[in-house]
Image (cartoon, rainbow, N blue to C red; front, side, top):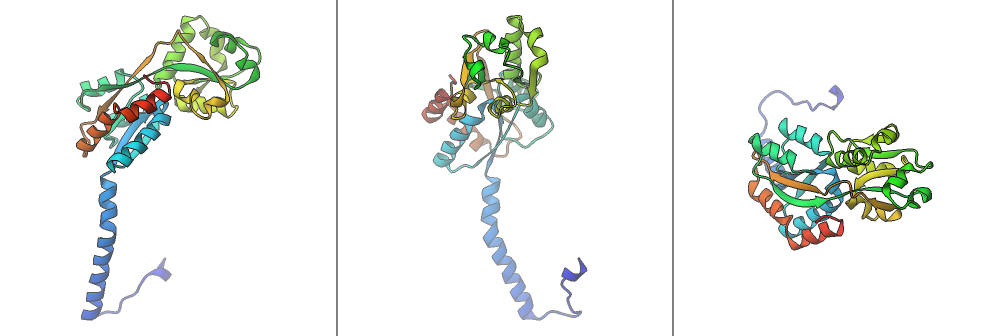
Length: 264
């Protein structure tokens, strides 16, 4: 490192040198301050992985309309909850259930939650044998279906809904050893999409995506609709902009996007 150090001679620097240095510093500050200011104005959103595909479109439309930048972190609801409780600097939280935002509200960490979407869990796959079944129960019983992906039921509401449906139909004990547990419901879909598993319990939004169109999906009537709530976090430094984003979730444009991906 010594080879790259700048060495100054002892004694007083000339007025010209001092003026040049000051002018250079001023130019740098003028050039970069607007960038820092713009970065500070961005919203930080924590979004449940099941809502990733529609939220990317919603956030892009919101940014185009309001010029407010949105930085998004996608993960399981349980993982995001842990981050928020431990002080992660998010402004808004879009959960995959109602219980988690309500818990943050009760702890005084968030404002009162609002319902922004209702989704469904489905069984998805692309194999010929898998797609030849009449029902989701028949699909997972087929001999050619060896592995099925599921989001962690402990941290992902869509995984919990799939587990409940399996237990309700008496299939859990026969299937549990063939389940591949993913960290998020989006990852569960990717496991099947990439061929790592033969099928996936995933969000209907994934099955309705461009990638999802390459396979088939089975509705799971035994799994109830999943009501999803969002909340503004009290530690947000940009509450006005955060509130605008939450209100935008009910706008005609956002509603059209949600409906296209199976949310109601």
